Length: 229
Image 1 (cartoon, rainbow, N blue to C red):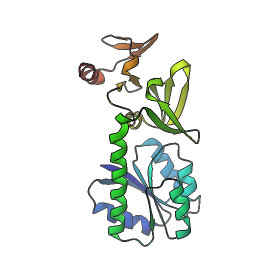
Image 2 (image 1 turned 90 degrees about the vertical axis):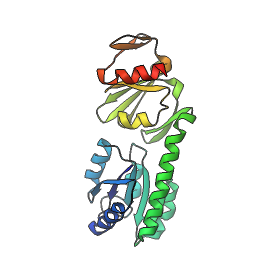
Image 3 (image 1 turned 135 degrees about the vertical axis):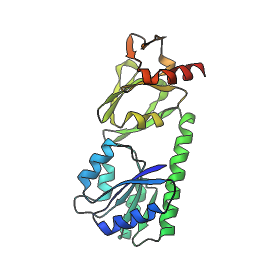
Image 4 (image 1 turned 30 degrees about the vertical axis):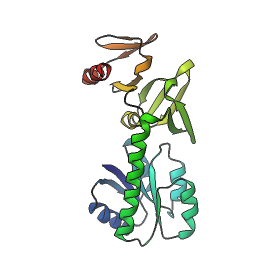
C-alpha cells in the first residue's frame, strides 16, 4: 500500500485527488494540505511514499519545496502551467499531470509510481550501498561501512567506520526499508545494527567491538530468527 500526501493551495484540486485516490486500490491518501508548513511538518514526522504536489503556490513553488526536503519521496507534480514540466522532470519526478486531468491519466500516473516504488524495494538486497539525502546532497554509503544506525527524534544518525557519522531526516522504520534485510536488523527502538559487524551477543545486549547496545524484548524473536536463518 502506497502512503500518499497531496499539497495544493486550491481545495478543489485536492478534492479531485481525494476522489480519484478513493477509486484506486493500493494507495492510501493519508492527508491533504493547502498550507505548506503543515505539510512539511507531517512529512518530517510520518512515512510518506508519494507526494502529489502542485507547482505554482503562493508560499513557494512546489519545485522549491521538493528540492528542500531532506527525505527522498516519489513525486507527481500537478499544475495548470505546462512550462514547468521540464524542471519537474529534471528532479526525477515520477510524472507530471497537467490540470485538468482525467481519472485514467491519474490512474496511469499512480501505477507508474507504484512500479517505481516496488522496483526500489526489490533492488535493496542487490545494491552494495545506501542512497540517502542529507545536507542538501545525495550521499552514497557502502553498506559494509555502516556499523549501526541510531534514532534521534525526527532524525537518524548513521554511524560508519572510523567514527564517521551522517545525520539525516528519516524514521527508523523508513531507513530499515532501504537496507538489505539479511544484513541489518532492528534490536531496539533506538538502534539498527549491521549483523556482520556484531562481535558478541548476550541475552539483553550485543556488542560491536567496544560498543554495547541494548536488545529490547520486542525484538528478541526477530534477532533469533535472523541469526538462525
